[in-house]
Length: 111
Image 1 (cartoon, helix red, strand yellow):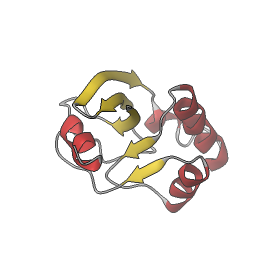
Image 2 (spheres, rainbow, N blue to C red):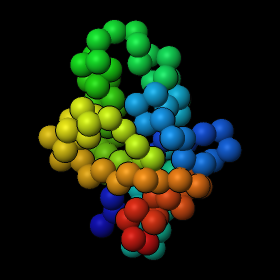
Image 3 (tube, one colour):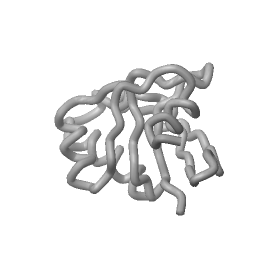
Image 4 (cartoon, rainbow, N blue to C red):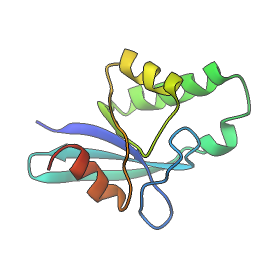
C-alpha cells in the first residue's frame, strides 16, 4: 500500500525550507520499494500567503492537500497553527527535512 506525501521543493530539487510560503511542492506516491510517482505543482503559496487572512491561506493549503489525497507532509519547519490544522486533517507531519526532496521523503517514511 502506498502513501501520498507532499514536500516543498526548490528549483534544484532540494527541500524548500518554506512550507507555508513554498512556491512549488511535489506530491509523491511512496510504496514499500520507494517512490512510485512524483509530480511537482506550482502552488505560489509564497505570493498568496499575505493576500488575505491566515485562515484563508490555511484553507487554500488544506484544499490542495485534500484534492491530492495527501496523508503525510515532509517539511523543514512550519508554524504551530499549520501543524494543528494538519493534525486535525489526520495528516502526519515530518519536520526537520533538508537536502534532496526525494531523499527526505524516503528518510521521513523510513524507506
